[in-house]
Image 1 (cartoon, rainbow, N blue to C red):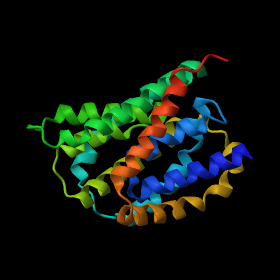
Image 2 (tube, rainbow, N blue to C red):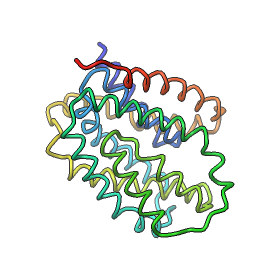
Image 3 (tube, one colour):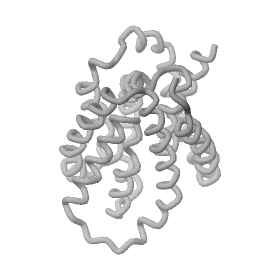
Image 4 (cartoon, rainbow, N blue to C red):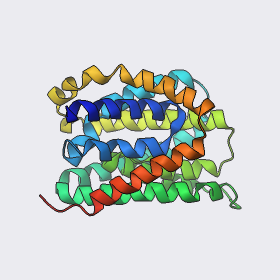
Length: 242
């Protein structure tokens, strides 16, 4: 029963994130999955589900992207994915849990300062994009937490909200496609098939996410999510080896 509840909840989270509720929701996906499986499996088993969510988000925001930012960040994101995958396959599960806990708490820290980023006096440099791309790819490959570096960089570009979301959607759709190729051999196909029943929950979550954006106080929602992420992150960070 716990397995069914966790998978259904994760599918809903994927949908909510693709519906526009963003990085805080995404950051909770892998930590929640570690309740029922090792970190390595938790990172890769959701790749097909993330791609389905990406397809829904691409449909919602088709063409609403600034392609030059994707071209700037994606090459180094690929490098980050390769490096992140190396660590994912080389480190023991107990160490990965500690890293995942640290990443989760970093996302909370990012959300606490994100409003100040746009007020920074900023002079664009290509190497900033390379660094953000590499960090996003690394975080995505190791813990499905690639959004903070990418989002921090994009906030400094002063894009309108629709273009911002569209560019984010395209970038992470491509990142997840690259992850499918780089991490494909790590995916347990029977396990993926065993959770395929939850796929219809993803578009429901995306629809719900769009509705919640219009009706829910997003600041209140984000604080609720951050409190949950702090709890999960500390549990992972303080967990003892099996």
